[in-house]
Length: 367
Ligand code: SF4
Image (cartoon, rainbow, N blue to C red; front, side, top):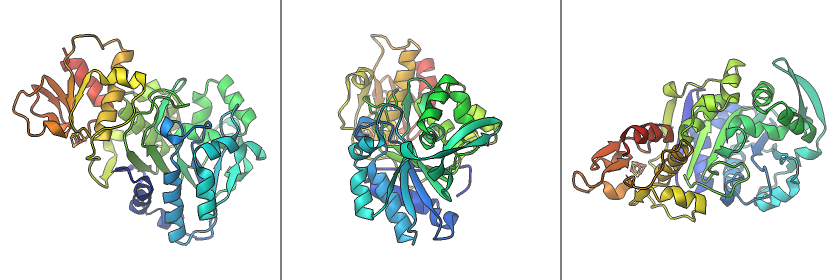
């Protein structure tokens, strides 16, 4: 896999999807020596089930471990340190990782209990947990979601889990962005498998999941987080640690020249999921007919951006979305997003379109 590749897969069999992304990325070849110490670093920020939009789905861990074990790797560990205020052990059980560990005989390391050393991270002193520093190959497994302080969170910020609690507190006193960028000059990001199944709209702790039913693969954590901005309708300038990490040489924000590798088409299943009140309020501006999860999720993120900017108001025509518009006559609705809605008077192409493009399109054409 090249650094500018982005692998995408849609569906609901998350374990199989994770294995397919690992195969497509040729992770076994990339690791090489079977004796290497491999770690999986999920997002276990708090003691909540993954369906809340906060934590990495256990099925993805199962898929990654099965892939590694089938390729002859045995030195595999899951490691994480929850945020200050939550015990990692409780989060571990709430997310169902206890069952994954016992089924595959893989140990879990609570980094909140680990020792640490201080390193020079491109001119900033940062403490890193010893177990994380001893790994030969780190598979970063963040959740793509919003964050109340840093706007988004994914690969770069997920590495906050590999520092001790006292350093986490210190990061907050420094405003998060600068230390997160510097941390990624010393924290490993050998492969990134992103849980884009149902990350939260805007809060790290979950509560308003937006179902996308997608798993992504990256080699470059900066490209990953720049893509997350596109997917949620933000600019990278809204998340200062992303361009700063690029400046420090961690990776590239150039999503325009990324090589998109689609392992399948968006999920054909209609959107049927429990919406929280906040998501329902945004969904009231839509008219879905058999919309794919990734398409509908992109529209929800875009509507949230438009809400932030004060665009949403009564009287706007509903935004058409979904495969149910494919066989409709010309002029079937005022406005639609996704290539399935080309019958609409105004329509945005893309399958699925990115939230950033939906935001621009609706700003110009929605009245
Ligand atoms: S454009 Fe149509 S097929 Fe493509 S993701 Fe959207 S609803 Fe699905």
